[in-house]
Image (tube, rainbow, N blue to C red; front, side):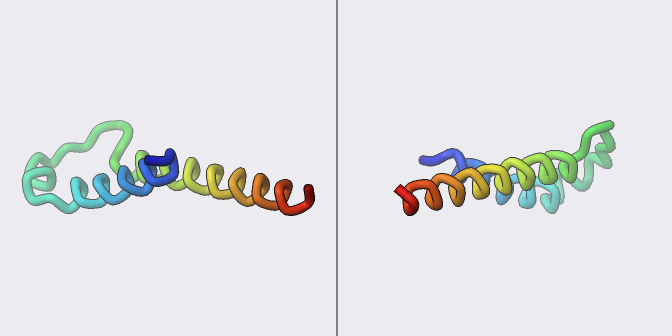
Length: 62
């Protein structure tokens, strides 16, 4: 499994956790939230996609 696939799977799991009734019932409010984790994964995914596009462009130019 590639890193980008793991990031996408993690994003999916975080969204499920955030909506889960047991999680919501906790009324858990840490300094860093699931939203923060989702944002970090989004930035990582964007970076991976940018690097992949750059690599594809470099390979096309060779």
